[in-house]
Structure formats: structure tokens, C-alpha cells
Length: 256
Image (cartoon, rainbow, N blue to C red; front, side, top):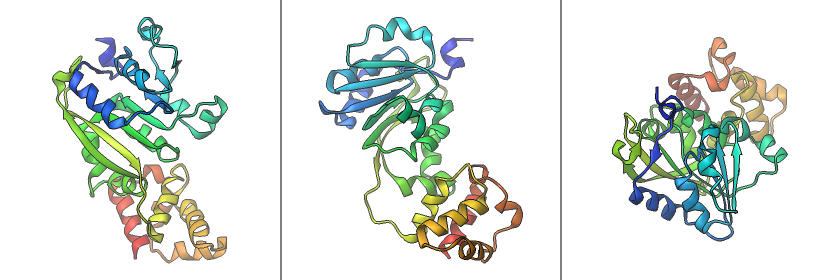
């Protein structure tokens, strides 16, 4: 099997799409950009022309001959993006950035977006699979509820398979993601707190959310959770393991 296909890597070769990505990133000389899945460095090199620094993350050391040729303002790190993109790990390794611009391997789209929820960045321009983008914006998926709590997402351009080498089986899309600036309701604040505790059981995450957002005591928060009428088995599930239907159900309970 082609190694790139095995690693779910599809390298952008279309110069028009590349220029649209750079344009959407609105790069300034002070910007520090995180490039996830640098691959052969085509996007990385373009970012380096305008940014102060590019931090390029690549799992496959087979691309070292390409990435070793990058300009001096490129810091290449050979590691798993999902392991390093963590608030504590980034701080430990003294990695700071204000923008993210990347052609993301399709297989890590959802876990990566989950990681990004807790990070502080100005904007992200991401090339992702169109299927995931449709899930990301669907009102019938939990991502359709989660995403607007944190981001404003705008589709920049649709990208057909022939723009890549090797060609993926699905269409892709370039998306601009910016931090949400509009006012947020109390129910939305509760949902944000819930999402940021996705490794906890739903019951504990709800209790913590009520104490943080509404200033309740633990006892008061537990009473409020019990009055929501959520099934006990569901309360024992971790937030990250809730299905679309279950997540929407919880959101509806909090709204009422």
C-alpha cells in the first residue's frame, strides 16, 4: 500500500487552493503559525514567507529530506500531533502560536478539533474532508451544537480530489475558524463547560458545570442534576462517548 494512503496523507498540489489558504490566514510578520501534518512542506514553505515563525508538526520522519530544506524560521517537530496539542504539553515544550494553518490528515479531524476547543488561538485555516465539515455544521450532530459555542466557521473554498496527490476518495473544503465573539447565554455557558470536561462522567461534568456557571454548591448542583430527568445509565457515560442523539437530548434538558 502507498505509505501516504496508509497514513491518510493527501498532499495539496493546486496552487490556486494554496494561495486561497494563505490569503485566508491573513499572515502578519508577528504571527507564529502551527502547521499540523507538514508532509512534504509545500504549505509550510509558503507560510514561512510571511510569518515570523512556523512550527511544523510531522509524524513521518520520511519527510525529513523535504523539511530539512525549510527556511530558518521553521521549527520542525517529528511527533504525533494529537499527543503534543495539549495545553500542558504545549506549555512544557514552550510551544506558542496564534494561528493554525494546516492540511489535516482526515483520520485525526475529530480528535484534533476536540483538542482545539481548549486552546487559545486567533484563527485557524484548515483543509479538511467535506464529510467532516458537513458533520461539523449539522444541527443533527453533537458537533453542530459544540462548534458554534466556541467558533465562527466559514467555508472558503471547496477542493476536489484532483487537487491532491494521491487523490482522496472524497471532496475537501478549506475552512476559516475564528473565536466566537458574540454574546453567550447561560445555557451555552453550561454546554461549553460540559464539553471541556469530555473525559468525565456526564453526572460529574454537569455538577461541575452548574457550580462554575451558576455558583451553586456541590449539594445544590447535585439536586439540580437529579431534576433534569436524565436516565441514570446515561449519567454514567463519559461526555465524549455520548452519541449524537444523547448529546442533543442533554442539550435540550439544559435549555428547558
